[in-house]
Image 1 (cartoon, rainbow, N blue to C red):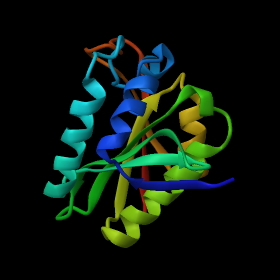
Image 2 (image 1 turned 180 degrees about the vertical axis):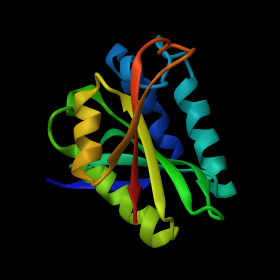
Image 3 (image 1 turned 45 degrees about the vertical axis):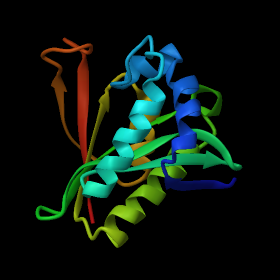
Length: 164
């Protein structure tokens, strides 16, 4: 299985637009549904600008050279040596182990290229696939919590951490 990561390019916008429009992506992430027209392009521009600022490193996940999702290191703090790992896998690529491999590659980048010490992540407790990806990559559960507002209001989430 060939899974690779590369930084987001403008050409990824059309795939983000296509796959982020699946309702299943919005059900477990902060991606809005319906996904607004043109949002893929504005998202790509935003994440490329954040990478230049050193506050976010967003990768395109490629499976056999096809767009398969997005893996992000967000809220990068080089002083505290922390970041948040966030991702989504395009629905046609679910249940193939792609998330596990892509997360490992992002973790390697965070620890070895950015010299970070702690990665944090969170997901809905009901998102068994995401929990499995994180735990298989060494993340440990910190606590459960209930969302107080937003689209997941009153749902239970799980915070996890990975220490280098």
